[in-house]
Amino acid sequence: MRKLNILVVEDDEFSLDNLKFSLSPKYNVFTSSRVQEAVEIIDSIKIDIAIIDIKLPGDNGLNVIEQTNEKYPNLKFIVITGYSDEETIINSLRLGAHDLLKKPYEESELHNSVSKLEQSINLENENRRLKEKLEQENIILRKELDKNLGSKEEMIIGESPKLRKLLQKSEQIAAHGINTLICGENGTGKELLARHIHKISPRRNKPFVPINCASLTPTLFESELFGHEKGSFTNANSSRAGLFEAADGGILFLDEITEIDSELQAKLLRVVEEKKVQRIGSNNLIPVDVQVLSSSNRDITESLKEGILREDLYHRLAGSRLDLPPLRERKEDLTHLLKHFLLKYQTLFQVDPIGINSRTMELIRNSEWSGNIRQLSNFVKNWVLFGSSASEEDITDWMKSKQNGIIRSTESFHFEKGDMHELEEAKKWLISRALRKFEGNKSKAAEHLGVSYAGFLKMLKNL
Image 1: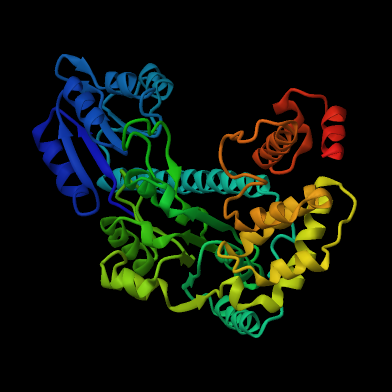
Image 2 (image 1 turned 180 degrees about the vertical axis):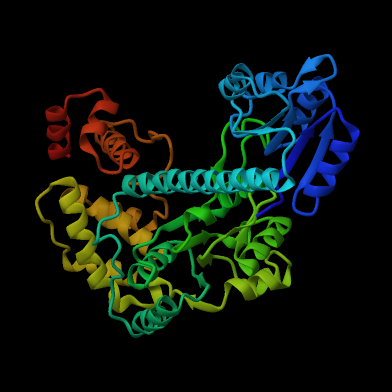
């Protein structure tokens, strides 16, 4: 914990020097002999405890409390007085004094009073930090719930030798809490594998905290990962725990680690090495127990050679490494994946089961699936919704799509023929776009399109 900042407000130079000498070995001590000067110090420095003599030249020390108490609710006050009348005591307590010492007092009395307030401050800080950590965990939990990640979605599907070997290695990584780098092309399921490791690890009952590093600006990156104190930058209206604190005891998943700025990589390295995090605007170091899983779709050797990824950070994050094979290298898993996605989308869209004919299966097996499992998932989504009336051209078109969409991945429908058949295609595109936007929620899709729920179901059935 950092040293506390103590302000002594006293007009007697001998008493002032004596108090400073007595407290300095353990605390940072600031001094003042006037009310206005004391208020200015409190405004400019985070003071934890103010020791105030009531009798000041031409003023009352209680005015320091009156001018600062509401503005700095965590500031503690010790009042020193030569008076013992009831009115002085009542006024001191009414204004917010936490302790009152009557002159003459023993030095040990003052140290006991300061020590008690120090314990109170440390306890309040710890409670506040835990509250902020809980708030951050709740934000993460709400995001996770919004993703609708059920047990089936979290399953790693397949029986291929490459996948089995990968899962066996994952078990050891999970058991021993090793920081691990997960590599693989887009769509191979890097986050899914990270979630699988969390699910089978001793940390399973602690948070899994994912963050996409590519989506964060440098300033936002520090605030998100390390947290910040109130007033540490513009719009920092409250203190906030970072994702390292939120993941304490659990797993932090850093997606696209190679997209982090080099300077920030150095700060990240320090946290991973020291297992302590320092919020922006704070001098406190907060211990964290976090297993870090990270991922990249870049060639790691090239990233190290080009300086995109710091070598020292790589060695800290890649205590072990998992390389997810692309779908084209594990085509024996296609049957298992197809069954999984067919069931998923039939349930999601509440449609009758639809099988895959031999000609379509041949096309599926011959496709390279450059978008990997995500691309296959999108294909099955299209097939479940529109496969019964699809032409071979439609099927081939779906297989080419790498985007997270249905039918067409563009943001607008381009008419080419201008006939009624194309108008039906436009309807399909519009409906599928709405379903994609609301992740399969038909009520929200209907509302978005401005039609009744019953009307939307009828349109979907007709298509």
